Length: 139
Image 1 (spheres, rainbow, N blue to C red):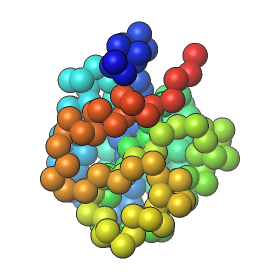
Image 2: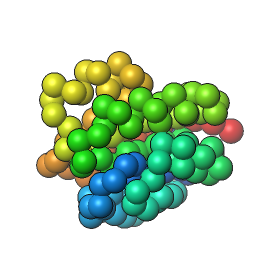
Image 3: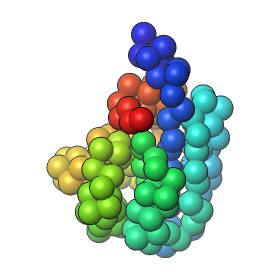
Image 4: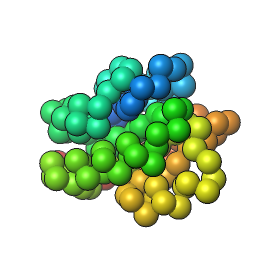
């Protein structure tokens, strides 16, 4: 199965909280679930700029960038982060977004480079499984 394929490598995930959103309970729950599932997790903390998230992703050489956004600023912040990741050479990093994202905004986020959007109520195992199946393999 896919989990066997990924068992020989440790997937590195950056969990970022871009913008002025001051609520990070969901991000911390996701970070802990991913860590407990065997991922190496880097949590950036609150109030990160797109540049700070991109810099952390590059410095940590992550396979996955997960953004938690509850503020409604996803349409402005996510494309900036995608642009920064591409410019920094991390265009192969899997980009996922979670939070309060209206259904109508999901296609534009996916067109901008987001692989998956997880909305409230998504089971944690679904997030884990998605990342295991889709994280890029790098040496």
